[in-house]
Length: 116
Length: 113
Image (tube, rainbow over all chains, first blue to last red; front, side, top):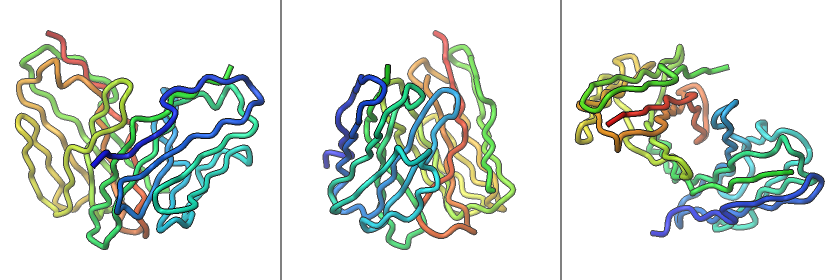
């Protein structure tokens, strides 16, 4: 299996621009998670989906952030407009929630976002 | 708010030394994972523990889950430079429904040759 795929791996943009991050979860997984990682705050959960439905978006910083999962094999995280404080590494992770209780998540390689 | 405390935050040791990393909470976990993250990469799952008192071994790494399922430890024997990385514990709290994990702040381990 190819694992979780994220694109782009690196993104440099200017303040005010729209940024779209993409994620393809592991085939067969039914939960998808978006995280943000910074030195100051560590790994933060932004939003997660179960069976393509957003379950908990309480970690989304503000209205500038939005996430969609139109189907089981694709999700996007959009920032509009972007700000320098959004600079971080954004990870997508997926898991299979089949009632086993193991909750094992598998992470993609991340997108390093720099907003100038 | 369910918190997961991880310690120490930083650890710098010499090759060949042993070390232990701790993960604690006041709430009960239904499962707990340990991950290792290297620079420029995403966290990689090392192990999952689900049963109180469970011990799992992965080469020189030994993972223990507390009897009450509120704490866990990672012990590395004879550390090597290749063990350098960020170690993260993550737990699914029994009180919380759904599949989300709560992550600790991580332990940055540096093993010097």
